[in-house]
Length: 148
Image 1 (cartoon, helix red, strand yellow):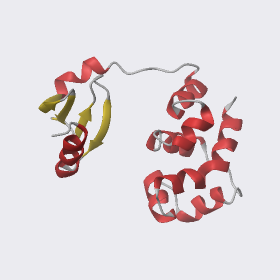
Image 2 (cartoon, rainbow, N blue to C red):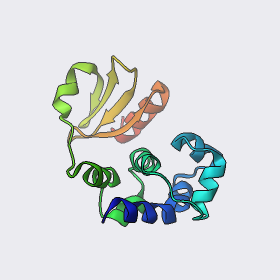
Image 3 (tube, rainbow, N blue to C red):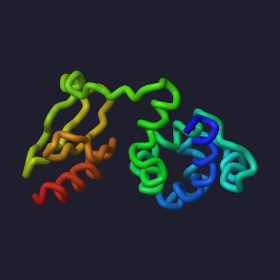
Image 4 (cartoon, rainbow, N blue to C red):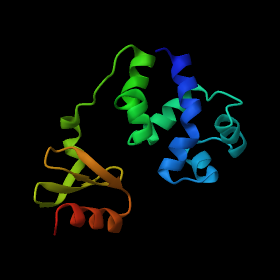
């Protein structure tokens, strides 16, 4: 697969990814950084999304089942391979200095980033599973997942 084929495949699934996420065209265009007119043209397969738009879609909707099934895994990993020739995986150990653990329960951790004010929940494997800048939202998620 090359960038052109990847772009064409994404074009044909743009609307499905949007509806899977429950986004309106207005919300999706705002999230991706496109005009609504451009989004409509992509969804109607009249124009191809540019490479930056493809990367934005894969990064912002990397949890999409449509994209995961379409590409056989993490769509962002594939964009890295197509762009750079290989995928680069972050070393999450280096970021520990930025995160403060607020609570732990049943293997889950609720953390707060002291630099960017984002909250996140990590699972028992120390993998982030949800993040938000809204404390109430993330605490509700944490309590539900950790069975508090």
